[in-house]
Length: 386
Image (tube, rainbow, N blue to C red):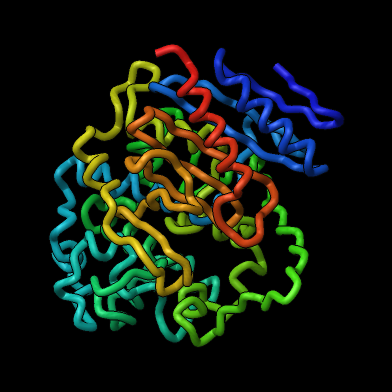
């Protein structure tokens, strides 16, 4: 089915009762010439929205999703918890003995995976090649003294949290997180998402387009993170521009399987990934039981973020809803990405969705247009017969 608004066309399918989502996407596309995006959603384990629009994008296109990769890493963590292989309240050093260096012997998995460990980066800072070299970065993190007392505050571990999760998976399971995710989660469930993109899938990858420069607000000072600040350290600003080149557009980053920023996928794939955590899909039992979902999605920390400089809320790896991230109910969990990508699940409403725009937004993070689509999705569900 195709919906046209002026010169803009939206392709794909929606289930009866969800037509407003298609109409909202058409309005968004009409407001911005050249806009391209995908949006997919599941309700009660059923695919109810599968839409795409804009130039050079189709139903099977995939692209780099930056930090939305952390959602896949969080689901890998949850599966280890589900299997009884990982105890969130055990010290990280139980699984990774070298991590005890620098006074970190008592830091628990829960603290480390909720951005509270004070390991938002390492100093000296990292080049791109060092950042995607897992063994190198894991060794640096193991030796690093925390930048704040673990558990006393939180700050976004933009890159390093993926390395910590990956090392835990390797120590417990023996496989890299990219292989663990592909073999135990994505491939058996038909989920179109990769932590490490195989060369055979590269022909489907579309480059992320850079954000258009924002018009300056009168009297506003530009936001700049000094290279010697916690934010500068977390994003390696002293070593390189974190967005030049865009990591999502670098083949080596996509191939490396960096579990914080390196994943690729489609909106349909993100929606199916999150839906698999909370519902049976196509006759396959849900990936995680209710108790595991409640445990890993439980709010762990909230308030001023020492790195991002704004209020944030985190569960175990996942983001929790706030005024910026209107993912859904208080039970919702997910993760955005610097390009504007959104992936989330809301057990309260039985919803899961993914949104992947081609062009980055400024400031980086969840695209407000994706939040509009998610809000329309919830309204459609509320209006549908029980």
